[in-house]
Image (cartoon, rainbow, N blue to C red; front, side, top):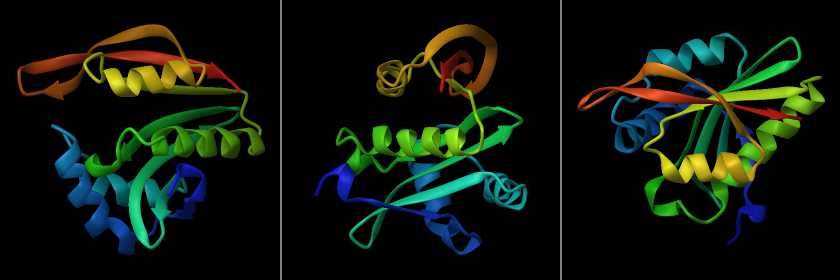
Length: 150
């Protein structure tokens, strides 16, 4: 099955056991259940991607006026490299456009080369750095701040 055969649905609190389990597997500094609950309660774009009947990815983004900001985009390890992240990002960018968005921002770890390549292929460009933004096993890691004009 391809990324085009996937369906996207709003994330709900009942999805958080699965989401937080994936988050712990995928990230050295995972979001907490509370982070996801706060995002849901704030009305952010919280989405799950399903392939057949199985969840394979999730994302959280929000809008402020005409700017969107990606907070989390994650694809389960066994499904990475199949275009699912690209499809999920495209969906979020389309949602932002429909909501009046003209720019999309995100932060990414320099060590996350796969994500960095995805964002660059999707039209994002580096506009700055945030020193020591991310916790990491060796201390702190900078964030590359990126923007894409929608």
